[in-house]
Length: 363
Ligand code: FE2
Image (cartoon, rainbow, N blue to C red):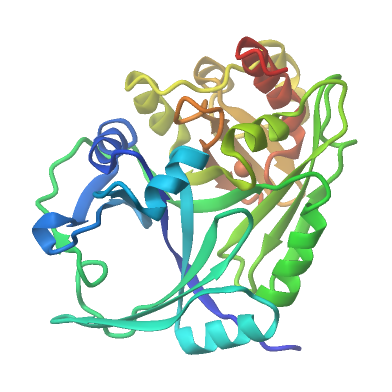
């Protein structure tokens, strides 16, 4: 058995570049139940950027804005809108992670770097991924600070958490013809394996289609589906994303919950708009999925989708876009054995996605 040359401990955090980190932090707090636990900014000695660390369960998001006009963060936001810039993975040894991936073709953005403060040393290194997205390796070692040098803990007020427990998977959209390039890149450079794949025959409606392959690390903790558009009669939702994001990037982040009905009920009370699924979806659901612990009527009431495979079942729901551009959205997912991604739901989902896309005049 080959040894894993890139052992990953967990998804450390996601960093978003946004136009106004203070307002974004408020939104993630009040709507999604994240709590701001640390901050970097003028008060902490940062002259060019401001960042908020948002936490819920094991999930950590960092929301970052520039404080000065001529800055890569502003250029990123002008081009892509608010979007995910960094997918950070915790590793035991950054030197090794950078050395192994570089030797296998990774483009280095930031060589291994040690940052020190009174709480110890934190090591990081960054490599390029699709579009302007980057993978950051983080070695925490015995660093005891709240998050990273430069960050200071802040008094955690905030709304009630909604039960989001961890990041389940992170999906990237790439251009037509690029999916297999990134599949090979994950295999060769990161040592990941392909978990499953869908072709346009699995995922298509009359109008649009996509292809998707899921890459997974050796531990199964990190799952990265990659989508590319497929030929359809009209513009696919992936093309719409690529047009408005101006290139590849993170399409959705799926968040685990242990009680999806409760999570979704609270999110709906806080005015999160979820994709509306045709009622006909629920007519055939009971036959397709069979017995589950949840109440079908409640799922229908909340618009939650169900899918079953050989390992078990899963419950999932998708939000609308999180910004004016039809780009990043979220998925809430509760797994009961299934390790899949809801293939049986894709068709119902696409009908719904296309309805929204048509309303935006992009179909
Ligand atoms: Fe997903």
